[in-house]
Length: 155
Ligand SMILES: CC(C)(COP(=O)(O)OP(=O)(O)OC[C@H]1O[C@@H](n2cnc3c(N)ncnc32)[C@H](O)[C@@H]1OP(=O)(O)O)[C@@H](O)C(=O)NCCC(=O)NCCS
Image (cartoon, rainbow, N blue to C red; front, side, top):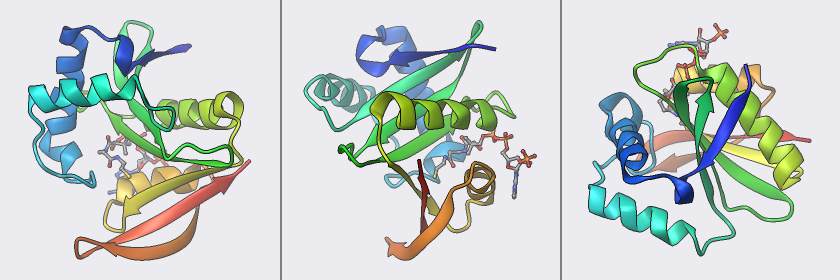
């Protein structure tokens, strides 16, 4: 089924609140670099700031009538971008559709040569998903004492 990408900067407050609920969900924020709960005020300020940023893009992904998750691109340069994803916590099995969207947008629309994913080593579900989409381990590092794997895929 076809997906639509809804840029965060175009979303109304209701949809921004939905996205924030997902982002603050315990199953999601435990895997984010910033695991803190985010206030609505800070969230709205962040989304506003995206209007002036060429190096960051955040999208709510819609498939049919359903909002299936969020994908984002940060540190965008001509050569590469860092990717992020989280699925609607009420849905399961959305990882593939989200990753297909990431790959298509990253390599075709942004036109970068390399996509980078940073994943905590114990995030088995995300790591498995990235491997399935041909991301390979480039290096490991420690982030706030937690082991993190830097993965990448080249066009
Ligand atoms: C990562 C995420 C987007 C994946 O979405 P999802 O809907 O759960 O994805 P799927 O159900 O399609 O599962 C992806 C794969 O992981 C597998 N998987 C599930 N649990 C697993 C586990 N504990 N260990 C290994 N693989 C696992 C699934 O079987 C599936 O593989 P398959 O296609 O070979 O069957 C979602 O889990 C999520 O939002 N997680 C929280 C945020 C997050 O971790 N984001 C990534 C940060 S780097």
